Image (cartoon, rainbow, N blue to C red; front, side, top):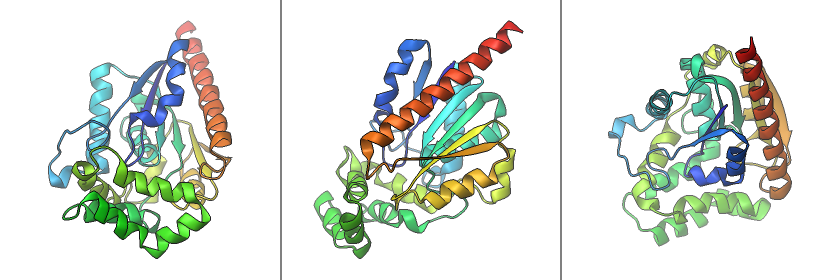
Length: 258
């Protein structure tokens, strides 16, 4: 079976390093670096940096690689893109794992305000100036006091390699939204596991509940908070992915046997 791993905004395929060993058990792993992430310097037209453009890139990649009936596992932005692919091309997806959703139908969501601001600030400022500006924001200071690892995650959008070059994608994605209406999620017919955590200002647990409630065939899993209990979160997430992969692999074997 095939597992398609789709990273979050400002991250890269390295976000799934802990899952690489799944490839040794007969699972075909497909890890992507979307434009403006990792070492992918592919430039899209300014008006094409958005969820629909990224969805179409994923669909084109899957078609080129002959992917069918795959498990899509996406984090944050990647969770939204995985759901969009499932809605547009149900033949590509047998199951979706939507981890820590950050958007639904709202553009410029308040939970991602700092990330969008980073994208805008890089237009005419260097890395040090951007970091100083963000660190002076009351929202960032509160986050640093309450959940320091979440604040560090915000700063990683500034300190990552190629941060200035990739910054326009941050601003464009935050200004966009994966769905225009909640009803669009009804087009996702495959099973979905929506995964949320508490104590995560960037990925409010309420969005995980809303996403799961809008889908016709979904279950909600609340894992240990990533920013407060990172090791427990990583273990629980990996166990959940292994369970889904094993179940999906068994179902595909049953299908072949029939």
